[in-house]
Image (tube, rainbow, N blue to C red; front, side, top):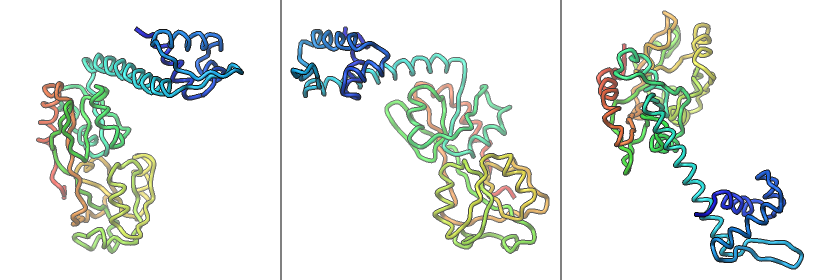
Amino acid sequence: MIDPRLLQELVAFAKTGTLSQTAEELHLTQPTVTRGMQKLEQELGVALFNRTGNNKISLNTTGQLAAKEASRLLDMEDELTEKVRNFAESQTRFLVGSDAPGPLLLSERIENKLPVKVKLDQNLLAEDELLPAVESYRYQLVFSSHEYQTDLCESRYIGYEQLFLMCDKNSDLAKKGSVTFQELAGVSFLVLQGIGPWKQIKESAIPNAHFLYQDDLSSLTELTKYSQLPVFRSNLSFPSHPENDDRVPVRIDDPKNRLDFYAIYRKDQKKMVMPLLELLSKNWPEDFPY
């Protein structure tokens, strides 16, 4: 069996191109790296380098292939270590993530009713992070605005989120029973920065709108108290955020005003997550809470 340290040296040499830089990156001496590359050639039984008279070496085509395969094997070793450690931790904790804040807000609101003790990660995941996070056992459950079915994971539809507006009672918007996104053209809004896929929906669906993004919920809540600008709320965020008493809810009737959410989990952890999903589905609110 090849020593993984020799593979690390080969990958580092492919990256840096010289023995001296390889040694520097791995905090080794250059003679140590030289002996390591020679030993690796002996163990593989092939030449990996082109050698010149001035004592310089470079990877030949076989060495280039070996470096790629070595990198792949090292990545697999890292994935194995991460997966085993995550699985061990999953025996004592239940970590939940999401690509949007709504499902987390709902989970937080009914946390005392949940059949298991969960930890809600408020740092939103990017769409391409969701499946790897579950497949590696890092999260036991993630919420996504996309459905996934793979060999390892499956998803279950749990509900949808729709936005509405809270408007100053003296504003023109407050006089309307409902609006479309097009009718909000040119309006300025107070908006939370971390809203996942809703950010792109709002910015693309409302022409010439001005979004005053706030980094955190406490800043948004405080600013809302002293501003006449409309703010977005949803069936999942209500009633998590306190409002001024004089703000008026306005429905947004628009086909783009909807996100369907799916719960993604590993198939081998389905038994663990189903009680939580059933409770979430049961407590999922209607689209307009007023």
